[in-house]
Image (cartoon, rainbow, N blue to C red; front, side):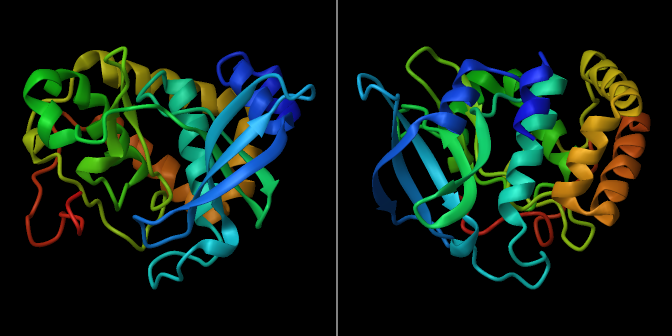
Length: 248
């Protein structure tokens, strides 16, 4: 996995190399979540620099009736890789690595204002959120809460928490009802078509995603990709079916 990510210029970042190779350091629990989440500090070999990351170990995943056990961290990783190739949405650098509690995802921690979320940002940045909504539709995100949209000090907006994705046994759940029934932007549809061609011509990427998601979930994803490419509008959402809980 690491070798392919480093060979692939669309996916690679210096931060990925740090997440993969820097020494594990201090760890503390983050309490607001159904699954176990930790803030983990990494150090370079000389201990002169550090990097904070969010660590989600496989062992800390809560069993769910509509998702296979011990699979959420792989879905989170798959979402990151696909977002890098598409060019949207902004998902912090993510890798799979053995941590203090075993294998799981390590994702770069983004400093942000905890008082800001989708509900407080949408009026000023609704246009920028369209790629979030389309990505959620594509990966069948079952958990798009307002708190999974954050803004850093440079006004960049980031997308978090993509573990509940790529599953044919779940449904789209989102707080982004503003896009319900709206026209899909042409530039985003072009990006999807380019991604489809890229997927066809990159066997390493296909093998990587199949390994993380299973053949069945990968086939569901590619079928969904073809359907989304053909769509002219975002589907109409139902408040009784398509809303996550809690909203934040």
